[in-house]
Structures are given as structure tokens and as C-alpha cells.
Image (cartoon, rainbow, N blue to C red; front, side):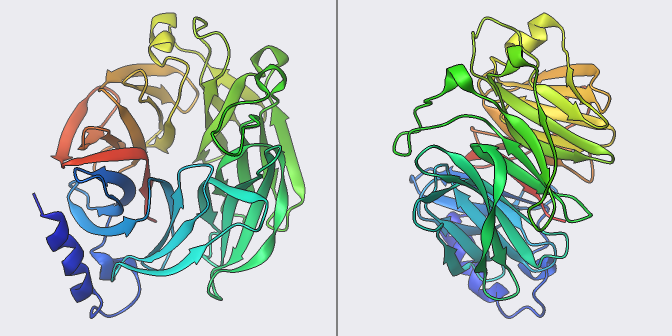
Amino acid sequence: MTDRRTLLKGLAAAAILPGRGWAAAGSPEWLAAARAADGSYALYGLDTGGGLVFAVPLPSRGHAAAAHPARAEAVAFARRPGTYALILDCRTGAVSGRLAPPRGLQFNGHGAFSPDGARLYTSEVVAKGSAGRIGIWDATRGYARLGDMDSHGIGPHELRTRADGAVVVANGGIETDPQDRTPLNLDRMRPNLAVLSAGGSLLSRSELAPELHQNSIRHLALLPAGVAFAMQWQGDPAEPIPLLGIMGQEMRLADAPEEEAMAMQGYAGSIAVSGGLIAVTSPRGGVVMIHGVDGTHRATLRRADICGVAAASDAPFALTDGGGAVWAADGTALRLRARHDLAWDNHLVRIG
């Protein structure tokens, strides 16, 4: 296993490589935040075999990252509610900038670049009341803030940008205490899935049925003609509530056998789409649910504290767990790629 200090020192040598693309940073396949054995935090680049390509230190626990579509540059977000987002040069390990939300706003764990890489959109909330905002940053001018737009919901979490430039937002619906994340409105939640134009116009907004108003929409994966979304149930934990939704021409939920649904323990931690399949993870339940893109349940794979998931080139999915393992998964089984002395955080972000 590569020594972490050696890995960090090696970043300086990467600076002499020509170009600013991802090849100059070792051609990583994925990005993921993790905690090392000494308690420090970093954002790591992983290759197709699950090996560590680079590590860039973070000041505190990370959550997700946004990878620039062309430059070897990533923006790493703090765990929500966050006060920082770091702009990282993944060739050198340098922190080239630090973003802070305007006074009264907090980052909410996720961001996404526009398809051309010119803009960064960030998930944000008004600290008091959790009203959703989407920050807009100019990635061509040192991430100058251009302003923000209404997310058209409460507590936005993950967002994705479509090829046409539209921004898809998972408005979780939960108002939280700005200091300790205590939920304040579970009896009156109204999560929704919103689609905004690049300029902020509301293109569509879809809500769940009233009896599912406590199913917080959290994470997203784009489909060829729509979006798959993963939810976290805030109601009675004894109820086997669907945690996967598919939005195409209309919103529908994907059912699984009751025993399999209960294994998720009401919590979906991440979602990815690849090869005609959808993977939804639950670190609480220690399971990965595999569905077809039509929502049909295909398989349930089990691994303790598994959460990060992304598409892969040599298998439908790559996954990470809190024990430091990196996995490959198809529709029937998990295969170990690599293991590191790290505790991977919730998300695995594919580059490109």
C-alpha cells in the first residue's frame, strides 16, 4: 500500500507534467473523500483498479466533490451544513481557492459543473429556515460568484446538470437547525424534484404523493431520458417504503420485495446509473440494491457500511465502504478491487 506521506510528496512532481487535463493528475477514474487512520481527511483520486493516484488534504470531513469536465480540478465540499468548498489542483495538490457562501447561507454538500465547465452550481440553504438556493460561480474567472437562484424547495442536496444545461435539484424538504442539523419540520415536509434552466427559470417541479411527504429526496443519477432519485424516509421505520424513484414522463417509485426493502432501513446513501442498471446503496443496512432502469428489482448485494457508488468502465459499478474497500459490482455480485487504511465517505464521483 502506498504510504500517505509519500503520496502527498509525489504530488509536487506532478506539477511538471504538461497540460492541465486529468492525464496530468494520473488519469484518475473517480474522486472520493476519506478519513485516514491518523484522523486526517483528504480527497483522493482512484484509478480503475481502485489504487490511490493522489491525495489532497481537507481541513475537516468532506462529503462530495465536483470534477471539472476538462481541467484536473475538483471542488470538494464539506459535510453539510458546510462553510467551505475547496478548489483543488489535482496535479499538484495545491488548494487554488476557497469558496464561502454569502452571509446567511450554507453549503449543503454537493455541486456540479455545467457541461462546458464554465459554471459551477452549488447546493445551498438559507441558514434560518433552510430555503433552497443554487449558487452560481464563474469557473473561467477564478470562481467569482455570479449570484444564486431559487431551488424551489427546502433543503436542496444533490444536483446534476443535463447536457442541455438544465440543473436538476433534489429538494429534500427538511428544515434543519443551522447549528446541529436537528430536523424541525418532519410533520410538514414537502420534498420535490425541480428542474431549472441555466438562468434559473423553473422548468418543472414534481412532488411525491401526500402519504410519502416524509420521503426526503436526496441523491440523483441522470438517465438517458429522465433522472433516477434516491430517498431517505423520515417516518415510521417499520414501514418498507420505496427509496428509489424514476422521473421520466411522470414520477414513479420502484418497489422491491418487502424483506429487501426493509434491509435498506429507510436510508439510501447514494445512487448511480450504468449499463441499463441502477444501484442504490444503504450504509445503514449494509446493502446495495440493483434495479433495472425500469425500476424492476434485480438483486440485493450485502456489504457492511457500503455507500459510495459510481459507474465504472470494467463493470457496471464501482463502490466504496467505510472499511476502506473499493469494490466492483455487476447485477449479481461484489468483487474486491482494492483495500486501503481509510474510511471512505458517502460518495464516489466519476470523472468525465
